[in-house]
Amino acid sequence: EPEVTQTPSHQVTQMGQEVILRCVPISNHLYFYWYRQILGQKVEFLVSFYNNEISEKSEIFDDQFSVERPDGSNFTLKIRSTKLEDSAMYFCASSEVGGGNEQFFGPGTRLTVL
Amino acid sequence: AQSVTQLGSHVSVSEGALVLLRCNYSSSVPPYLFWYVQYPNQGLQLLLKYTSAATLVKGINGFEAEFKKSETSFHLTKPSAHMSDAAEYFCAVRRRAGSYQLTFGKGTKLSVIP
Image (cartoon, rainbow over all chains, first blue to last red; front, side, top):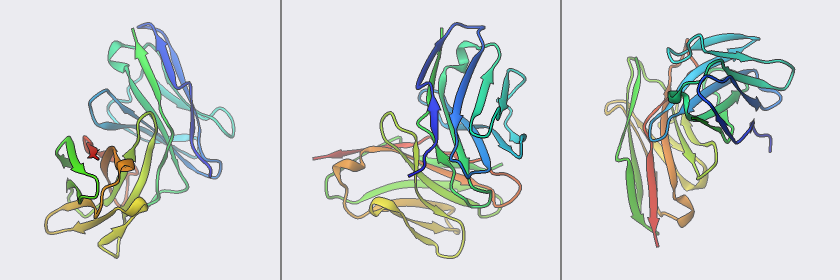
């Protein structure tokens, strides 16, 4: 069964460093998303991406964040200068189309900022 | 703005007992509604979704949920709990048009007592 994959599973970084979280969405999906879950809190939407551009972003997704689809398979989230409060589980998701379509989630990358 | 409230951050049931996980939403128009399950160290897996038509929705693993517009609720039930149901359950909403972002509740951790 096709699935969303994410690498790495755990990333530890120093405050101020740049990190890139990688995702491989399901191959025939057209919409891609990033969510995050700070420990003990809700899963929060960060950004959605369609047709090689951001279609929607939350107020969390400020200038420190960027997304890219560098090739036909990968979808990345970059945090330019990490802060302690960026420590969270980051989930990538993809869906075939919009509407009521299911978003398929990856297993997440746990980011720890020291 | 839409929001989701899940009553009870932690629910314990005995094996074989009824599972009832509560979800209430706030939205100006009936949204799409979803229940996701998260097993330890895994991503979010869709259990079921309400998009239109039938208000009683059946999902995987014997779960079902009923959309009640008058109560703005979408409670998740299962007649008989199994040990393998122990996980965290998230209710989520999505607007029908104009946005594909999911808004999640805080989650309910289900424990099943043998």
